[in-house]
Each structure stands twice: as C-alpha cells, then as structure tokens.
Image (cartoon, rainbow, N blue to C red):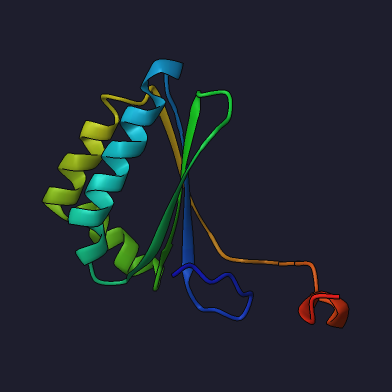
Length: 117
C-alpha cells in the first residue's frame, strides 16, 4: 500500500509517459501487467500506482522504492529492462524522475464528521 510521509526514507519514481490518445489504455494495461508479474518481485519494491490523464495523452506511474540503489538495480535487471523497452513501443515519450517527499497536507477530519453529524 502506498503511504506518503516526509519522514519515510524511500524514493518515489514519477514516470510520465506521453501516448497517442488511442493507446492510453493499452499502456495502462501493459504497465499494470509488468508491475504485477515482474516489477513487484524486485528487491526494494514497495508499491506502484498508475494514473491516466483525462485527455487521454498521459500515463503516470507513481512507484515507491526502498532506496535509490534498489531502484537502479531493477533497471539493470534484463527482464525488467526488456519490458520497459516494450513500453516505449506504446508510448511516444517517457520522463522518469526519482523524488523524495518534501511536504504533504491533507484535510483533517473534524469530530463532527467522524461521528456522522
């Protein structure tokens, strides 16, 4: 499960893929498949979330890894590398970047909401 906290010592991959509008779901399905069958078995993998833009031109993979070294080891894994190359036959562009969480904010639940009032 994805948990976002500033005190976590992990890295976040945000990879924004550009696709032709008619191929967005194809890429979503492909990324979901390789995540469930290959990526999630790699050391250091924590979670992945795949988002698709409302205009049909972007797919974003938000993935958490224990650390940068384990993420980079996954990139050197021949099976993972091969499948990421296949993703690039669907996408026209990929912009992968590693991040750390710097700030979070969320609505704080009020006592009246919690009790159903």
